[in-house]
Image (cartoon, rainbow over all chains, first blue to last red; front, side):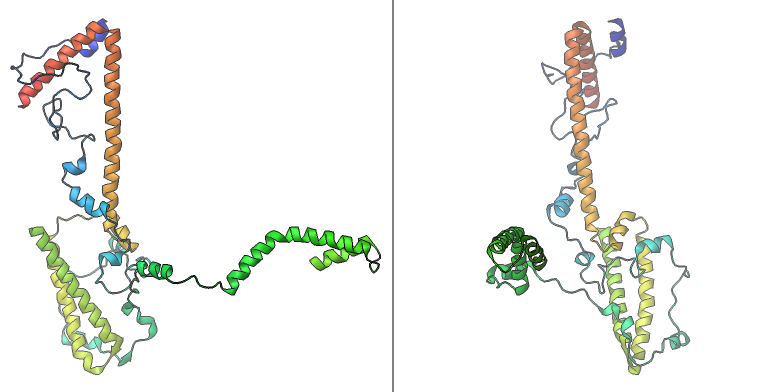
Length: 218
Length: 142
């Protein structure tokens, strides 16, 4: 008992001013030292407000709008959805054509401190040959194909009548059925042939007939 | 709002620069001798465009961009997905910690209940001390 008292301390604080609020009759000590109104943070040991994981941090930092914007709606996957007006194939990984931002950070290009306009003599270096570019250098004008609405495709699928089975499909299905029925058919055929061979005068014996039938079935 | 204006200015300069480059590419793809003057003009626009973008850089020197966003862009993915995943992770962690706090609170209340059964007198003293401390803190706070 003495150790227990020592652990929880016996020192009493100075007498406080008369409290104007009522304490709960059954104090279980689970919710903290002080009474806290709704939406308020609990008072810490030094009288400071504590921000803990028990509060909703998204509402605390006024991020509800951002949360609903990004998590409420479906965010499209591709970069071209974020930058629709940017020309070129931007949905491809940057590692393909050495245009990644990561490589720019890891190996920044060495350049001068200022940008100077090109003079007349410098511009003579940009005199080009007339005519179209070779096909290898024409990649930048390729735009990603415009997305077709999936709903239209779905609607067209439901509205169109069931197309007739193509020969390949029907054959495939038939082949599946045939495969399932083949062992049974084989047994039945064997049994029938055995019966025939037993009764027919043409075939000399059972053994030779079985061998011939098995080879024909193969 | 001033920050938004700075971003708008940078965005405008970048769009003009990209458009200039695109037009430059069109001229070069099927070059004619009469297009030389236009080509020279576009090349000089490129230099002035870079100058304008460089001026914008000074106004936005305090902006920090997380490196993970660059991973998304390099993979051709929408960078808004990074923001979405950050918020989802924050909410999940918030809920996880809240669960731990609630569990600890329940444990504390159960512990006090059991201790009260075993050590009623000491627990009565303990409760009296805690109530006095709480009153003192609240009086100080308000």
